[in-house]
Structure formats: structure tokens, C-alpha cells
Length: 611
Image 1 (cartoon, one colour):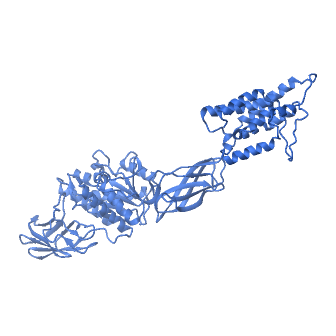
Image 2: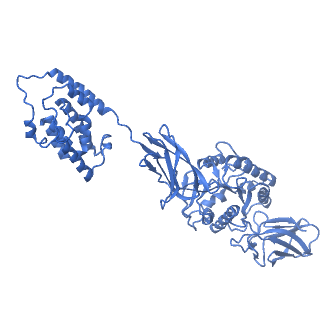
Image 3: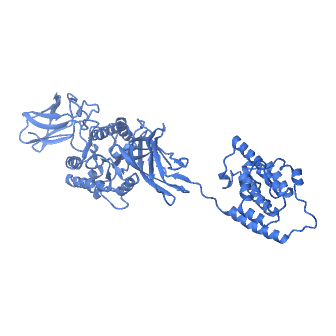
């Protein structure tokens, strides 16, 4: 761009200097050489020149060259062209802009190319031509008796002005460019097997024949997926295509470019990955996964998704962080948790306390809000976690059969119909976490819900008892302590790792037999899963024996061997008797049985007649 001093010089010269000299002076400003030549060498100026009077020396022979200088144009046409250039420069100087569309085609000046441009200009101007005195000496001497036809000159001027203005107004071709529609920062694509197919889209300008894409590691820039054509024939300024088999992992960045011109390129700025998406549904004890406890720091590959989009964890949410961190440590892939639990929500309509119920499929229901969000992240999940039941139990009228039927329908006729299965199981895995204790709750309805949950796990394909929680410490009437939520999260993670084949077990020990060995003693046989022994050795709590319609007082319950518990009653047993462990809304878990596995898993609740 012309400097301010140069502009002032040019402004004075254009009013007093002979046209050809004016052109040569302007050409010495390399930044505007292209602009000047574009206007002065146009066909319009040439045509105007052809109809104007010419001097006898209108063509100058260049020594040692087959080039000639440009013919003289009418003074009016030259000044009009210069006026256009000068006005453009004044505007750019005032605005501080980098240049007009014409200037975009001119390389940014550097020491080397400026020097070259100056050399080129000097070659085109014979020695001395830029000297005003020599130029005047070569100007033809027109006698006073020789007259010009001013009418023709004015007509040529008007015609020239019109054509030059037309050239200036003609838009230049749009330079090709490409814009990538980047993914949301922290987005996780659900894997299929060990990879995912990724849809890529964006826009472009100009003419592009094919678009390529590749995936790179965000921190190291290492290539994960090489350049691959995703759209061989983009049209109407839009490109879209699929990049197949992007391996699980993260974080990644995306790049796209023109196949024929690699300089036409766009880089994604947001980090994303391929891993596991897990829905978290239910009521407040599921919601508390994300809001209770600040004892842990989330792994960098852990993300959550809700109505507000993708976000990091930080340190809030003991259960969710414990769950996600454990899976990431074992699988080394990103984990995305879909946070859509609703406090106080029921499963059945009669358990709707004003916040919605999950069997409701109306457009504005809590279920459809969740399904719409699943569509946003791709419509594909690997697991669904269900922590719910308190709302239905509190109603006091929902039977075991009703809840079991409703939960079965919810799994098979809603979740598995509306969500694609991203796991390698036959059906989308549904993980049930047993309802926690309820201080002040009624035994019968609470036990009915827990029995129904176990019934569904036993009868529905790919439905799993992810964790029992009755041994965990309560905080208030409805929730757990922050430390207890860590244990819950780790237990559910164990279930996921077991399903994918990374752990040999996920459930604690289970009772396999209860028999009476004498009038006062009942022997309990247990089967271990992850451990091979249990604690405590004595003073075991949580057992009840029922005979003749009432409880039988227990004298003691102790470890007999690694697979046997013996219970001694205060009075002899007679007739039919039943036994149960961790029964009701608030069982005694002060000395609950836990195995010696790394997670110290509890003995599962039990109800049966005594053999």
C-alpha cells in the first residue's frame, strides 16, 4: 500500500506530469504495480487508445528486447484510471485495511520479491525515460496550425470511462476455501468393537473436486487415521462424508483439505474421542453420582453430557468419578456419562410425585428428553445404569409383580427400541443397582421393589445386578455418604469390566443353601465369586429366622469356615421355618458379611425356607 508521503507526491504529480511518465512513476510503487497495470493495460484502454490521435513516437523500442512499451492513452482516460487507483489507496490508508479484493492476489511484499518487482519495472522502462527533461525532449512538437478534433477526444474519453468502470466493477473469481464443522469439545463417539465410523461435514467456496480428512492425536500431532477421501464430488458449497474405522482412544483433532490443492485446508480446534457412552437413569441416588463428594479428581478422559452439552468433571461427584476412572484405567479409552436422572421420579404412573415417571413416553416426558439427547450424541450407547425404586416403594401400593412388569417393559419396549446397541452383547446391557436402605421406610413395599429388581435381572437377557448397596452407610433418609458413593461407583465399574471380559467376577458371595442341622442351629452355605473367605468371624448381623408366624431370637451368628455361617437360636426350632438376610427398608448392617476380594463385596440379600 502507498505510504502517506507517496500519496501526497502522487497527488501532485498526477495533475502536472505527462501521462506516460505518470504511469512509469506509479509503476515504481511495487505494491500497486498490479493495480496500475490492470487498469492501464486493459482492453478498454487499448481500444480507447486506438481511436485517439497518436504521436509519431507512440511506440518506444526497448533495447535488446522484443517487448514494447504500452501505447499512449488519452490523457483523460489515464487520469481517470489513476483517480480510481488513488481513491482506492486513500480509502485503504484511512481504514487501515490490508487491501481491496484486487490486492489479495498480490503476494505480501518481502525484501526479495520487492527487489524483483523493481528490477522488472526498470527493465520495461528505457534508461532516462524516468527523467522528466529527457522525456520532454522526446515529446512530439505539435505546431500551432495542427488542430485536434476535440469532439472525438471527448467521445473516446466517455467511452473509455464507461469501460474502465465496468472492468473495476466486475467481481474477481472467489478463491477456493474450506470450513470444517468441528465437533463439540470433549465429544465422545460410541465405539463399535474397537472403532467408530465418523461423519464429517463442512462448507467450501470456489471449486473443489474432492475433500480429504484425517485424524491426528491432539497432544502429539501423531497421525491416527491417514488422509482419506470422504467426499469425491462436493456440490453446492457443502461437503459431507464418512471416515471409517477411527480407532478407540483420544483426544483427537480433525483435519480436512482439498485433494488437489493441499494448501486449501481446515483444522479442527476441539478435542474429541472414540470410547464408551453410558446412560445414567433413575432418581436422586443416581443424580447424586454427579453432585455428592469432592474426594476424587476425574481422569482427563472422563466427560459427562446433559442438557447443557459436553463438560468436564473436575472434582465433584464421587460415584461418577470413581466409576469412570476405574474403567478408564483398565480400558484406556474415553468414557462419557449421560447424566439424565431426575430427583423423585417414579417408574410407574402412580409413583409420579410431580417430577415425572419413566414409563411415560409423551413428547414432553423425562424419558423423551433423555432419548432426544441420546440422538444428539449419535443414538448409540454401550450401557444403561438404573438406580431407582424409592419413589415407587414410597407409594406403598406398587407390588413386586407390577414393578417387575413395568421395568421389563421399560427395558425391552422403550430403551432397547429407541436406542441402538453399541455393545458386543446380544442386547443393550441394562445394569440395575439395588435400592439402598430407607430409614423410616416400610419393609414390605421396599422389599417388594428389591425383589422385583432381582426378578428382572434373572429373567431379562443382558440385564445385570450391577451392585448391592444395603451395606453402605446412609446420609440422611434417602442418600449415602460421600465415601459410600465411591464404593458404589467402583462396584458398578466392576460389573462393566466383567461384561467386557476384563474382570472374572462382579458380584459378591451368595447363599446357596440354608439347612437345619439340629434343634438350635441353622447352617448357611455360601458361594464365593471374587474372594475365598469373609468377615466378620463372629457377631454377624442382618439375619432373621421366622417360625410359626413370628421371629425366632438369635443367640449368635458366626463364621464356621470360609464357606459356612452357622446361626444358633435361643429356643428350639419346630415346624416350618424361613430365613432371610438384609430384609426390609432398614436392615441391620453393623456387622454385615463382606468377602476378602479387593472390593470387599457384600454377601447378597437372601430369603428362603429352611431345609
